[in-house]
Length: 474
Image (cartoon, rainbow, N blue to C red; front, side, top):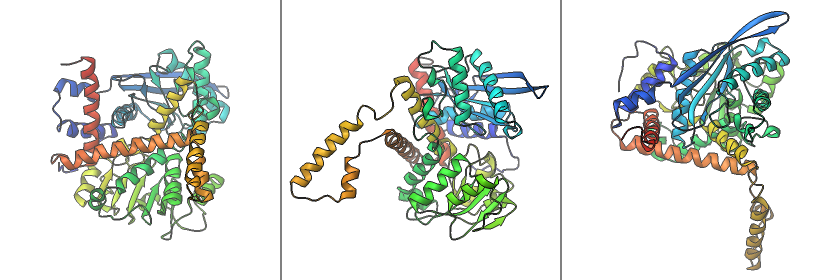
């Protein structure tokens, strides 16, 4: 599809336009298509908090896009920019994301209109617990119907406050720890959840590079090793994506964009050093081993092999899309490329791995955490030592046959799988399988012009199949 990008549309409209293009490739009833497309319900809440003797009123939302599977799933973001349309768009993305990667959740999302930087820790705890209480009262937080997770502006700390609040109001819920994911491990969280979205991005890129047709389409060759990468955003997702690409895949992180400026080094940046500098100084400015660029967004237009927007919506738009010089855009954030921008970049021959697939690592590992909470046992507890015993017998058999195994390899063979190993294995498997489905549909359908439409087509089809199975339509 070629459209003149004469008007930028909202994030919500971008999601819906992608839905419309994908739906056009499928044979499903129009009424069912419209039901899947639209948000099922949205709860808006206002509540007062007394802060330093003054009353402040806060507004928040929790949207449920689709409950074709329960519970519905989606993060809660704390942001001074959040609004109802954004929450609805994100809830729709969660529906399609979960369906695409075969995670049995519906789609939901929450947001609180707040600048967390303005309040101290104790005040943020009071605000978070009150918001949680408002959602709990209406069953918008529940281990069986609606399970939030961290998002922009929230993390393990906020999830711990929410699960504690839920437990105080629902003490009879034996699965109360499953009411949110992304918790600290000490409160029922799971090893590997903090890194999950970033590691999922890397697993997705690795799978992309395993398929020569996809790599060639992006005008690239080889593997991730040596590829020049620019990362926009060194928060949780950007940090783990960049760090893993640098340390495990040999990619060269040549640029990092942050809110206070950007860093550029053609020879590659040390991600951990930059991150520690950011933590110590509140930003990247002043980092000594790179060129500092005050206008960070201009760095999106620098030449590179892979551009990874990992922070905000709409950073690549019709105003700058024509100047983007990368070969591959990998969407680690939600909605970083507008609908109009994608049209422009596609005409330029820039390949794009969509957010609906690439940043699904968080919800995949959240699913593992939810299962862990329902089963009341950590992964690996039952089988790890049994595996080690079996591996030891195997090693003895090999060496008994006269074959000496190197000590470092023997140690790896003997090691049983712990929780982090199983989580990473499950995440890798999920990302591989999903990309294989996306590329198969893309390459086998002449009327599908992008990986995004291929991914959305698969997701819509799976949601529709769920409703069909329920008997919603014949």
